Length: 257
Picture (cartoon, rainbow, N blue to C red):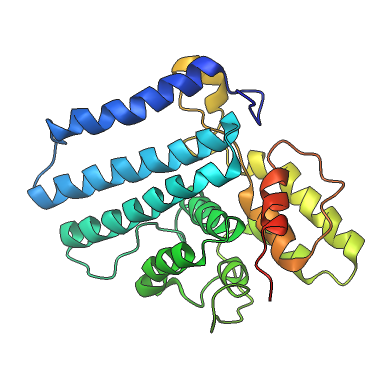
């Protein structure tokens, strides 16, 4: 295992991969406790979306080849679509979002992580499908980072000066900094304050739980995506949460004009 973060043990990595397969078999024969079949289907879809996301993240943390992440990302987007479909039936709201990115910081972070993976792996097709789920729920044109991530890849995005969560302020400032060195410094600042800002997230401090815990990796993937999209020098960034090799992969595999 050529792990990318020191907290991941081989036992934790192997156990999760085994679990990710066993949980499929278990829920083939069991049901979630719920008040209705629609709610049960929504809970089931949420569970498998969460497992797919954790599998992708722990695989990256565990050191798999970056190209091997693509089928996992495809599976994750399918699970997001299933989650949205089942949630809409359960809540009787057709255009409901699979993530409440305005209310919950950790769900916003999940959005930018997944969107960033689509961008860095050059899967515009998956990004279109993922963004469509949240656009349809009314998030289009509401948040600056949301739009700044998407506008370099998807057409007809909006220019907006407001954003939902203060933690992303240095990242947004890096995009618009006039001085290249200042932009790099802001990117570093963002990485340094990223983990403390998520102390309320369910995954915070999960590395302290040992091999039986829920740790899959701590990654500010969106920081790398902003560096890639906006040409910010990240050569001096040496922070655990910064996905440097993902950015290098994106640059080396960028489509030619």
